[in-house]
Length: 138
Image 1 (cartoon, rainbow, N blue to C red):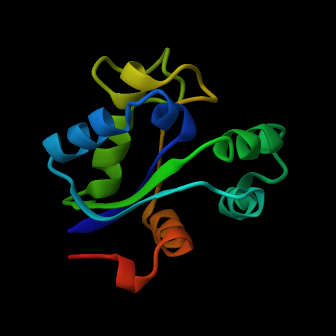
Image 2: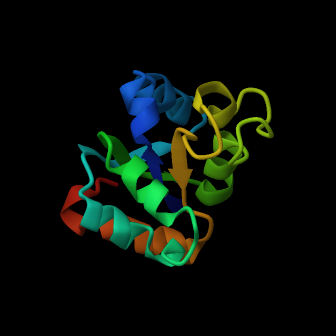
């Protein structure tokens, strides 16, 4: 079994889509082993996205991720990273496949409803950034 990190972003939470996204996660065979609703501070968002600090979109991304609550999760299943990325769809919802979360729930490339780790190393960092061992079940 593999674990990955996932976020339902502020746009999807504000639009009332968190429940539908959670239902899709379970329908697609993921086990949610940790989950919490939280409102990121600017410092927390900057730390999480530190890898993008030098990118031109960094400040807009941090502002977006702090505008409202997010749902942070650890998901588990065989090939969880690839499976979650497939379910999310392309970063740009205009390019996302039909039925993917971003095609269904994202507004644009910046307000794209969900986040997921892109590799095992990233998943390990992101998981530890948001959760401690006591918060995981399974």
